[in-house]
Image (cartoon, rainbow, N blue to C red):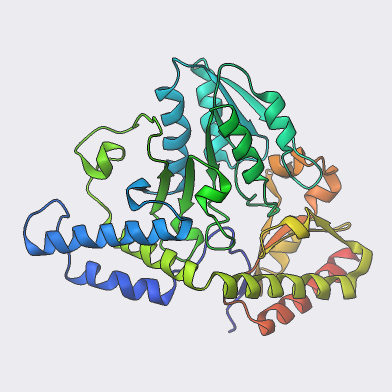
Length: 380
């Protein structure tokens, strides 16, 4: 049987064979503790530092500004809570948006219960934050702005450079969750003007269970864990050398192949959309702005179709995700689509299709055929 075509790369990516090959020695024989003084310990320490330099090069920062974590959720927690706790004597106000990943919004909700005040900015119909709204939300006691680089559901790229300039002018720490953008578009921390940036390994062909946080040198942050001195005590604990090596290699490859991967993902995404529109016409509704979007991401609604019914119907052939959750027969629309003010029927009909760096024309053409046939059958 043919394996289903995987078109949910924003959810996770497979481990690239080059990444897996790089990790194997640290699985099979190089098992030493990086804190040990003997040779297999030193070799592991060197591997971690090599990976740190590889990650740093991808986002154009100093290696010592990279801190390894277990995932993007941990990185976001460290960034938002760490800045909040370290600067609470200067103020208790944090600015974020209504379309952030739960790894940020849930942290902000928690901090709200701890006495912090959170401003959740609205977005336009494309899911874009207005930099002017950020500027207008700033108060004398604002200590942190956290806005994602690119949205995981609709792919909208945020005006991080403009927001970064506003943050600098007002001497406010600025964090961006770049989990979805790293490896797909340029993520230069200096051009973006950010003080902290979150990376998720499993979104760029590294294994699950590894992430990183960029912290600009001189940024005051409080660590959430306490232990030995690993990661300069910001994130103590024996290093996950195997996965760290994998993340380093994945970042090296992402920088090496960025233009090629960007082009292939965009061509695949656009081919899919054009194929759907050519056969389904006005029944296809695109969410977001494809001119200011991740190259691989397509959020699309099929008129009069249940997204859950569609995803389930085609799951033996094509794998995609939906823009809503279904529990006990009730449909709950995602906070992102709600913030974009999509009407309930459109939001409930929305699916997210995300291509990968190696998605082929044959896979896209097969996916078009499957989706078109399914939409026509479910429309009857």
